[in-house]
Image 1: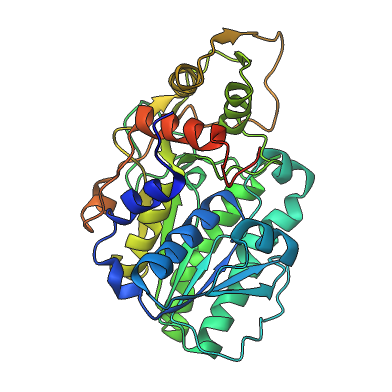
Image 2: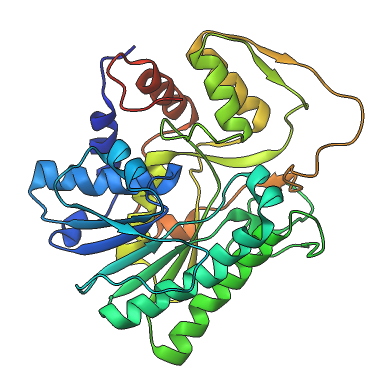
Amino acid sequence: MTGLSYDDDLRTALGSIPDASRLHGSRILVTGATGMICSSVVDLLLLLNREQDAGITVYVAGRSEQDAVARFGGEAGVVFVPYDATSSEQIALGADLDYIIHGASNANPAAYMKLPVETMLANIVGLSAMFDLARASSAGRLLYISSSEVYGQKEGNLPFGENDYGYLDILNQRAGYPSSKRAGESLCVAYGMEYGIDSVVVRPGHIYGPSIRSSDNRISAEITRRAVAGEDIVLKSPGAQLRSHCYSLDCASAILAVLLEGEPSNAYNISNPHSISTIRELAEAVAHAGGVEVRFDLPVGADSVTHNLMVNSSLASDKLEALGWTPAFDLDHGVARMIDVLKAPDSPFTL
């Protein structure tokens, strides 16, 4: 244990955002606000309120007010807004907005497979409802959280640039997620063309951090739980897939940087160039931080259809870094902070 707190990590992450003071006094609606990524965004905004008297109003949009209260503890500046991402019904706020961040979406492969229709609706119909809200509330900008899965598959291990699209089998059983993310990005451009609404898109890679949800069954979440519990990590594959792993607070600071500095109708990869690594390398880093070992239990037979088919999903970060954003947590540092925060007796997070 280092003696550092989660708030210390928040302060570090804030330093990566160019001129974060421009957020002071703003009214920001965040969908998916209790999820892994967007809860980290809200945490950064609330730290600005606590330590810089920023006066930011954060409208936390979601299905469960209980989850929002449990996650944010009734902090000043937080307003819960009932919201269903699969519905086209518009939210009635009674106030204008400065920014909208749309992050509500099924992000777990098991959820794509169990609720493929709802997954697609959140990425298209739910996004359209947010654009209608932007029109009604005179919002200055909408940011859409897409995914690195929009790239599909390509040969080689070079990171994907923002225009490097590969093959995507649209009839694959899990294709509803990347296909609807692609459609959502096109919808952002369409609303700009037809209605003049300013929007930007971010494409996160594979995010890890202490804000993982208990329902998250992705490999990064599973290995984290085992390490925190003092159990060896068991990999069911060689773990050779290359990914852009990124600490949750680096991801959150990148989102806010793009919100402030990104060019309209542009997409930005969210990737830390110091954390591009294989699944095995991530597991080894988590195991080292947790004081456990990595073991392999390779099954006989075909992989599950829920698995990401991209052998290489590493992302180039040049376009993002050109905005003035810099990552604060490389792989070893980010993993160590995650384990420390989760093991701390006063940790705000539970697995």
